[in-house]
Amino acid sequence: MSAIEAAFFGSLGRDAEQKTSKAGKPYLRINVRVGDGDGAQWVSVMAFDEAAIEAADKLVKGARVYVEGSIKLDEWTGQDGAKRHGLSAMSWHCRLAHIGRNRPKRVNGAKSQPSDGSAAPDRDLDDEIPF
Image 1 (cartoon, rainbow, N blue to C red):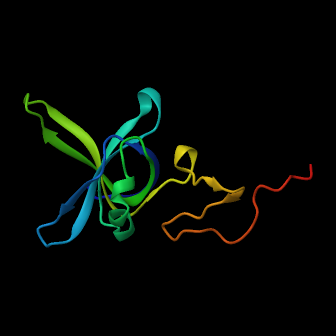
Image 2 (cartoon, rainbow, N blue to C red):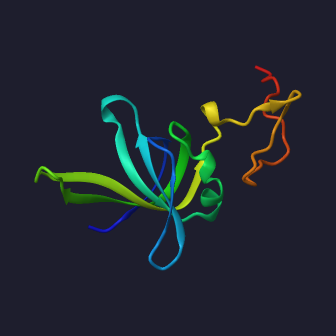
């Protein structure tokens, strides 16, 4: 089965693990819980994004992340001999989601800029809506 491109938000199930491929390229292994309640799915992600690797210390259990990459369904045999299925992704873009508890804090009444260089254009989105 071929891989499908996907983008998703989720929560980390454990801290990111820094690894190195056989070719010597660094990457992160993360487990992401996507969805809520009984419909939630776990996705095992290998992230090759340099910015994510640099921010690995912030990718901790419970953190919300945004991931883009190719996703596929894997099949393996468990220790009990039963066939198992799970989703895995190879990510080229992985960032902390700046929503919810990961949202940057306000400093002296002003919004702080994200440290990953993804600052939005200078505009005030907290102005009053005229209707």
